[in-house]
Image (tube, rainbow, N blue to C red; front, side, top):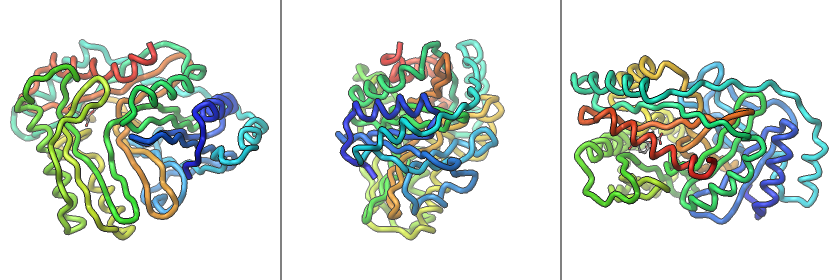
Amino acid sequence: MCKDVTISEIKEAQRICLERGIPFFAYRLPDSGNFCFGAQISGEVAGNCSPSVFLEDSGFLFSPFHVANNSPVRFLRNDIDLSKAGDLDILKVTPKKNVPDTVPVGEIGKGIYIKQAERVISALRSGKIRKAVLSRVRQFFCDPYKKAPEWFDGLCETYPDAFVFLVSIPGETLWMGATPETFLRCSASCIQTMSLAGTKRKDDFSEWGEKDREEQRIVTEYIESCFRNIVGTEPLISGPELRQAGVVSHLCTMFTLNKSLSPGEISRLINALHPTPAVGGFPLREALKIICETENRERRYYAGYLGPVYGNGQFDLFVNLRSMELFRDRVELHVGGGLTALSDADSEWNETEIKSRTLLNLIE
Ligand SMILES: C=C(O[C@@H]1C=C(C(=O)O)C=C[C@H]1O)C(=O)O
């Protein structure tokens, strides 16, 4: 699906699609020099069913944190992928669609966040929940429809080891990000995922504290249990090691299974992995309950997963983090962090501030 396309062709195609209301996706895989693009020029964007339905197709999967009316599973086809000389011209003559503007969620400022964090921390200290990921929304007023192609280019340049993406479903949503976190990658003979948790500033060289190590351990043990219960084979596990993600560093453990799995096993693995305690918490049900009651908003596509699916059962899916939703006059960054009984509300706020620099450094 990914042809040799230049960044200027990608930017031009993005501009045309944004202007004409054509559904499209653009991405650059981690540590790759290839830019990929796909636009769906006919029919409705598919969705409203289980993400697994699409894993044998070719296109781009966009799956929310929670499936809801305003955030269904979406799957974009790549009718146009810029592989042919006339592809840009086809986009230019695709009829323009007038679509309604989408509605922002609203900023969640420091006062509200600190109250929410204190509430979650006291539940964590009562011992029923070990970890819960609390997130917030940060707004920035600007002209996203004009700027998006430049930002995409800038993110690719600045974060070579991130999955950089821009995905547009006109009238529904437009997201962009540079995520460091693999959800699940599947090639002909290898399955890979990661446990990514624990955060400090990139220039903080102190030892990792117990809070970060505990946060990481919870995710690692959870992923191990998913493999044990569903695949029955232990993957190769390496780490935790320090992993730089732009402005921050994380602890990262890699899981590699050198084996191909049946579509049924893959689908069960995906269902078990999402959401991992890296973006949800542990135990899952109790953590999701407190997140939902405390955040009091739909996360929509934040902390869901997304990426290209190649049509042969192979795919590269990533967690939707370090990302933002784009509106006519502003962007909304979604940013969160894992809380445990050892958390301090102010430090957690600072962590979300630092993580939001991943995108703000480029767009401000
Ligand atoms: C939730 C986010 O990041 C996740 C939470 C982390 C943490 O709590 O240390 C680290 C990496 C991610 O798994 C985010 O960036 O919004």
